[in-house]
View 1 (cartoon, rainbow, N blue to C red):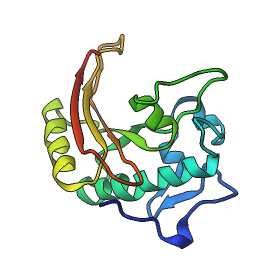
View 2 (view 1 turned 90 degrees about the vertical axis):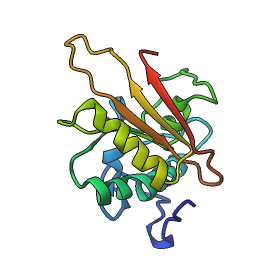
View 3 (view 1 turned 120 degrees about the vertical axis):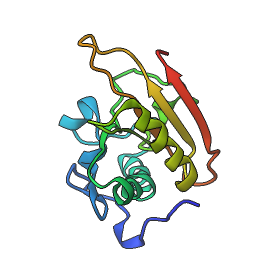
View 4 (view 1 turned 45 degrees about the horizontal axis):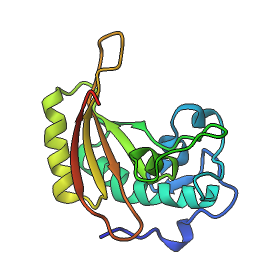
Length: 168
């Protein structure tokens, strides 16, 4: 069941990187790539306010719960990113969830790769999510690669689909 955002916390205007998404997280925690240096923009058929509200769902239902369980042993590695002009995304891809503020990538620095499987099991058993992906993609030329747990959530019904991804 999706935890609803308290009415007084719902972001509707004046959205900035310092906007509070939930008790312990700001919008800046969920921004990725070029979005870190800019503000949210209307994209993928949603207004910036709607994207921020989606990010609040992720923050309340995923980030706050991870903080309660794992304290400060994890980081957000991926979050909302702005589409480039004329960039299109597949409406069924994880990318569109990230663009709409409905997903987040999590990493646990200084933990062995086996820990990610344990964390994925905990998320599967304890959190509401639409998709949970345990991803290990060998793309860092330095050879330092960490798995990522990608979690997406929808405002309504969530499919609770679990995937693994390796060098995809």
